[in-house]
Image (cartoon, rainbow, N blue to C red):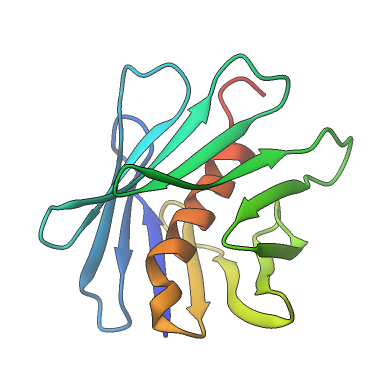
Length: 157
């Protein structure tokens, strides 16, 4: 299954729309504008909040918690590196390999491929293509991609 994550160009804070292959909105991600750090709320197409991505403050490196239905499912922590960003991912037993900053990476659960993420160049606003192998991983996959995007453009970095 293929999904597109498009960051809204003229919006206050981080706001994304997630589309299916037919161009239908599946999820909307909205930032709390006056929050310290990143605090993103994920809503399904009906407007129900289904998850949250929150930056943990007072840490040496950017760290984000991903919550679904009020329960923390995992964390993403940016490692201290000089050239290529790397992340400690404690989320669903998943790990990511590839070029995170260049937006061309794979996410695995053990040796099973969960999804491939790539950036679409020459588009209005940041647009990412996500090819998800199992549709049951859809929400968790979207939230991971958005958390990595937030860590890449961290306000305190």
